[in-house]
Image 1 (tube, one colour):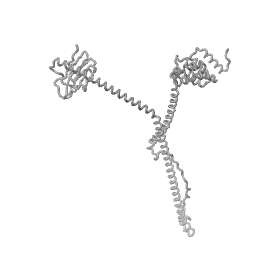
Image 2 (cartoon, helix red, strand yellow):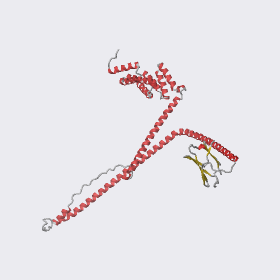
Image 3 (spheres, rainbow, N blue to C red):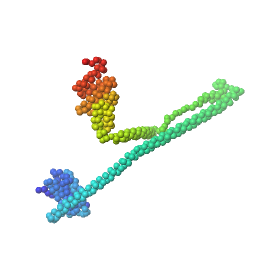
Image 4 (cartoon, rainbow, N blue to C red):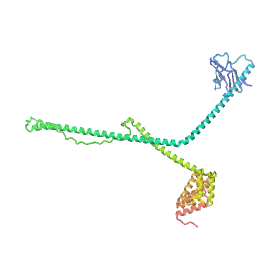
Length: 450
């Protein structure tokens, strides 16, 4: 039997009803609450609360907050009015049962409508997604055809802008040089005129000083007491006797060339430095973008060439494993060139298989292509990482074949290092141990034991 909750508090305003329902010692979730416009139910076993509301409410906007053992309902009324009671009073059992069943039916109908609405929305989303995907595919196809032309157009625009900027920069530098030259010539003329004016003034002073000297040769004044034998004119000559004018010269002043048209100011140094750095980065970006586009074009041409060659192959010839087996058969029959061709095609189809490089290195050893054998063995060792027990045999073969190529090139020290690396992986291999001992004797120049 459920325990009916009779203790609750409620208050109201003309627009809403506020209901506080205490539920201590139990965990309440939103799944325990059922509400329609006239019916409210809270079922948390073993507790049960049920209320047939006095008037309809807006169950869509009404809320319920759960916390601290209390459920606080905010029920918004459909009509603004004050209720006499929270629940219906003096209602018989048949009416209450009818209201319960009607609330459940309304809830089912509302859930069904929401489900249908979700289905319609989902179908619309699928339709929109399909249309968007088709548009994207069409745009992608058009973009592939127009990509090359667009890149070429962008590159041409960048080149034109670069040439335009460089031309404007050269014109600006030329104008700066011409302006500086004119200022320098004007300054020299002003200095020359000042020097001429100084010479004229000095000549006038000399002429004024020469007139009293001529008068003293005819008439002499008596010397006064305490003045010695000097006359007044001789004292004037002594006072006005000036040193000879200095020789005129031209001083050359060189200014630091500036990129900016305005004069250098301490407050503008940081700003000019930022502009200079931005200009430098833009030039670098332009050059790097040209290099990147050129590399992309070369890579695309290479891929297209490879694809055109591979289109003529049969289906089994496009399988790297089938090509590897075919190369192994050619190697067994002694047709090493055909084996190399088969391995080359397999590497072009899949360049991550170490056995392809390992088998091709064996072919190069037979053909005396020693440097290529060293390259393929090294590539196989790069791909045989990390070193695990499953690839021990392959790593031993790679070291031995590279060491053999080194020894045939008379690089015995490098060959001995590879043989010793193979012995570390397979220390019980007597053949490798004997070959390593022979290489040691060759390096030391000592005879081998019989």
